[in-house]
Length: 305
Image (cartoon, rainbow, N blue to C red; front, side):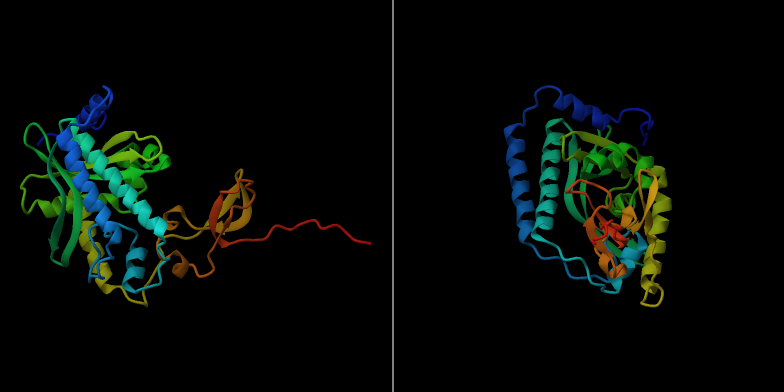
């Protein structure tokens, strides 16, 4: 199989852009199929989390190891609010829309939302992939659809190299894991990448991986399973230290969570003194930060005679 030069525009991006550039309309059969997919996604709103398994799932295996370790130790997690369920459902809805656009753009979706299993010598990992696409030459590639903030869309999904540099959610390992798992059924399938949708603007972007990296990430997956099986309460280590807060490049004297830790379910268990409070110095009412150390600003109260 031949792969595109990573400096070139991916063929999938071309199809998406061509479709969206011409006052797009969705055919009735695609609308009908999308409505069925919507129903299936909405049913998940009422579903309960799956029971804990002996090993991480394929969607978890690439996350920072301290998160996996905390999960194994059953540390207390930050409670999930109803807004979190709405946020996750919003992501599911975005995926349905993306699939409909791909189909209307003439993309052949070979398989969609299927459970899969990756066997390894250290144990089996389970997960559910988003979609497999078949190109005009019959080649199969694995893709994930991601709804993204403006920042993530412009930075994380800017390129494969950018993704590898900022992958605290484990997207790369997840994708290569799905690909390896499905090769048990579809010989020759390769990792494709991510189809990202900007939640603020609706823009769609294709971020293609380098499939040559699969073996490296598979080895990392197996190594992570070994470490996970050996993990206990005596060998926990954080992957990240807290960082110094600055304001206009000057230290404030406060310390805050590393960015990779801000979405971790175990952040309060890992940092018992953690405070989520208004950002120091900022005048914005919506600027908040996770502080591991916060020094109250000294106020000049004057002298009362």
